Length: 419
Image (cartoon, rainbow, N blue to C red; front, side, top):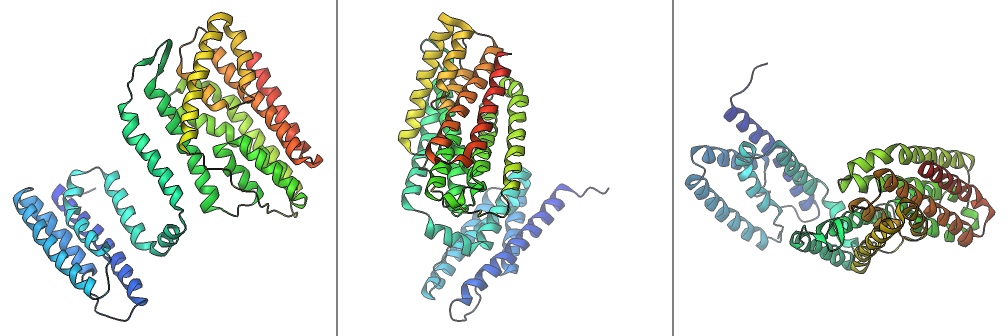
């Protein structure tokens, strides 16, 4: 295989990528002009973008400081004059201007940046140009309050988290302030992605999809929502038991993902077999129930749960994390593994995520096997709670298969933890 010289390979890559971007920009301009009166194409042709990229590459090779910066200044002035002309003609879009600057920087980027960064930039540019209508629809539909909440989350992730010390919380060995906030950010991020998918990508999701998406942010909340919907719409009960089981299956996947993302690989390996087995078995049971219900009404108007990224919820999670860590420290110090198992069973009837993550982060006077068993017990008692919720809020005997399977998974988890 013939290897091209680095400069030649970089130049060809710059020209090829600029040509593709130019084609997409040309199509973008044509779509914009189709809605207005015909006029000259102006800046933004494929040839122009390709030549700008070539110029940037050549000037960077000559000298990456003075010639390149002078060329950038001249290009910026030309783009400013072009923008002024387009504004007078009724076209105030900055997209062609920004694309021109990006094209000029393609050469230095290809010569110096990792391939993944170049690919990410190319994908971003092509998506922005090619999905103009879809992006506009999403922008119009995106509520203001969602943007404010997301902005607060980014502040907490980008400003607060870096400022937190990596020192341990007093009297809680192994648990640092940074670890607590990292857990808050990770679980809130995963939950928020599931919430956004449910609310905006699949707002009219069928019953089974409601179970999948709901389980991503809270299998307990999803069970309550599905059970209440069954009571409100008894005719749509056919797929509800399968959806409840799917939500619990997603709980196992979500917990494993959280444990891996937060770096607890030993615990993840220990829980892969039990959680993975319960995940697969739950999907199989849900599939059997869905197959039995085929042909019935598949749509259920289940409301979307509240935004899980609300800041009070994040602070509550952090407070529960600290509380469970302190309680676990006391219980394990005075009652050992037996006390931890009892505590895990009790905590399962509340929010198990902060308990499980605090349990894995801390250094308690029990073995790693006892910690893994406590995670299984907490998930088991949480399934018992969901079984009660499924029957209590639906008041429908057709939910019995879901409640029964949740009890079976709880029994299996108890057996694995105590066996």
